[in-house]
Every structure is written in structure tokens, then in C-alpha cells.
Amino acid sequence: MKIEKLEAGMTVYHVYTKRLLNRSESTCVDDIVIHSVNHDKRTVMASWGGSNVCEFEEKEWSKWRLKKPKLVKIMFGGYRIARRGE
Image 1 (tube, rainbow, N blue to C red):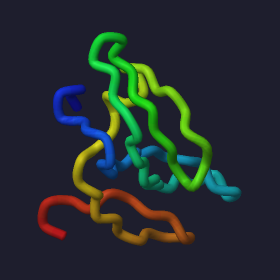
Image 2: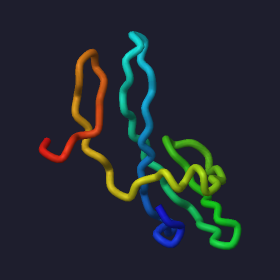
Image 3: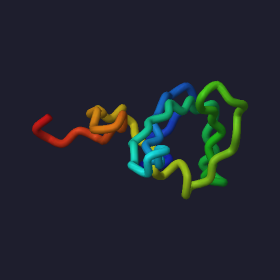
């Protein structure tokens, strides 16, 4: 993602994997609300999950997505990102 695409008031999505208790992995998606963008310092002020506003640097916001990915349920209660044909 490029900083030029980010604007205040946008909702973007952070996709990551986490390990469940039975050691299988599940894909998670968090909604992130952008409050302000600083093009000079290349930082973004945003909040996610109802938390306080935090400053995110380029290594964090560059992994965010504009569109919410579709998730498919897999065994043992986990999720993964859907493939093209699903």
C-alpha cells in the first residue's frame, strides 16, 4: 500500500495469522480507522479494535489492505483467505 492512497476517515484492514491452542494457524482480520496521515514523516495516526489512536510507521501501514478479504472456515475453527475459485 502507498501512503498516497491513505486518507483520514478511511477504514483499512490488517490481515495476520495467529496460532490457536491446538497449534493450528488461523487468519485474522482487524478493521483499522485512519484519523490522520503525515506525508512528510510517512506516518499514520490510526486506531483499531476500539483502542486509542496510535502512530504507525511505514513498516506497519504498508501491509494494510484497502479491501476486506474473504475468509473461508477450515478445520478446528480456523480461517484462511479464500482462493480465486472460492
